[in-house]
Length: 307
Length: 307
Image 1 (cartoon, rainbow over the protein chains, first blue to last red):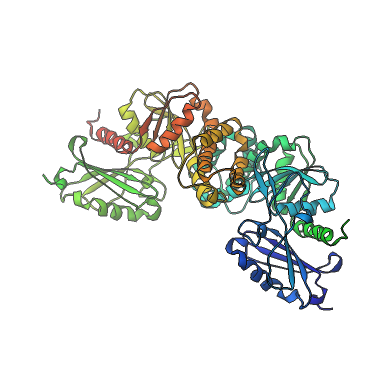
Image 2 (image 1 turned 90 degrees about the horizontal axis):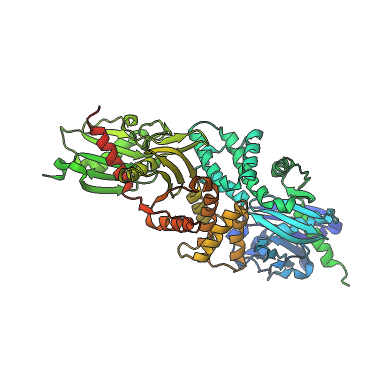
């Protein structure tokens, strides 16, 4: 049987800067995987279908409609189709809230996953992370506690009874990138390298004196000018300062809770280290397969006989 | 008498992105003023003299050497000549610490003002602000307390007995610019417009819960997506959040102290409002003439008969 014939459905993660697809066969069998730097940021609404078709053409058959499940920014305002945010508390993915995207090609039927929103205690949104959470809960259905999803916009998510109860987003990763690459600090911060002691110092200072962070940030520049800190140590210290600020803010969230980190191994390790310095153990789950696993769970519920 | 003949000396403020000169006659008489977007950032060490000559050629006379006093980034490493930082506590400007810049043209003799450095309680530097402080102290020699110099890198400076005792720099202005113009928040933040209540809310929240700022920053994005905050209010709120963080950090510095703000009137007003909400009165001095006045005071001491 050809790949084209074996294809049962297609999972899609469409981010701001990247498009990734998984071609799925019967029984959750992964047939193929592709990615391209064709994010939603560069596309008008009517550009989504041709961009996707160019990626999946090889797997489509005439006379057969292949379901496509799409998570990420495709469901944002100005995306392929706006999928209204689902207010928490709710399950991270519920197939009844999926929105059908308009298509011309009869070979595909595209469902877009909505993000989650929260009004109180503070306005917040997530789009994409709900699918990672669904993937994690598929493997850990009994998990009750707090998930940490570090990244450009880190999320701390309270999970109970397979639902997202509440969440908090932080600009930590974006702040790091702006400061390290586009600010006065750029020459002071190495692109790689690490120093555990500098990380721990920064972390501890931000946790105990979170208000001082803007001064400590300028201090990285001053220390570089006065040659009292290496660029590698400055990199670790900057990371520690920003993650420490986040831990200070989320303390009520993580105190006495079960914790798990969903991240790429490198970033997961940094957060696990930061939490262990607070006396907490947080296992790291590699986030990479979780999107696919979340979409697989959603697909199963979508095709399951309805009660 | 021609301008050329009247010219006694020239004051120069050479910043990262801008060059400004004041042509001074006898008795501190301002003869002319010019500026250009020729900052130190774009110049190699041997590019400074030709760039300056192009600006002041009209005011130089053959057979006469005109003193030039230069503050700002010209004295930084990689600038015209490196002027070693003066460690605090010290007077903001001391002519004996000025450094002579190498020149080929016999019509000018260039002295570069050094910045100030601090090792403890935290490594810190200033370069350019020391001249503004000298200008302020020229008019207010008895000032004892804390000066606030808001800007891209805000400085809080403890002054006693005409000396800089210690100081703290904050990345506040640069954080504002990065977040408002280059981050996820860009579409959420208006370029102008204001909302007093939003400013006060942001300020109060950061002062009482400084650790929450990275979450509150993401909240500006979420609120924009959920249409619960106007871009004008978001602009004021962002300003309040970042200045509040600074006030939380500097509280030990300003509690019970005399305060004065050296700033452009618009930013000065915002800081004065923020401080008045803490029950503090801080007069605003327009920072624009202070650099020239600081250099004038330095010039007077330079030409005064030495003891």
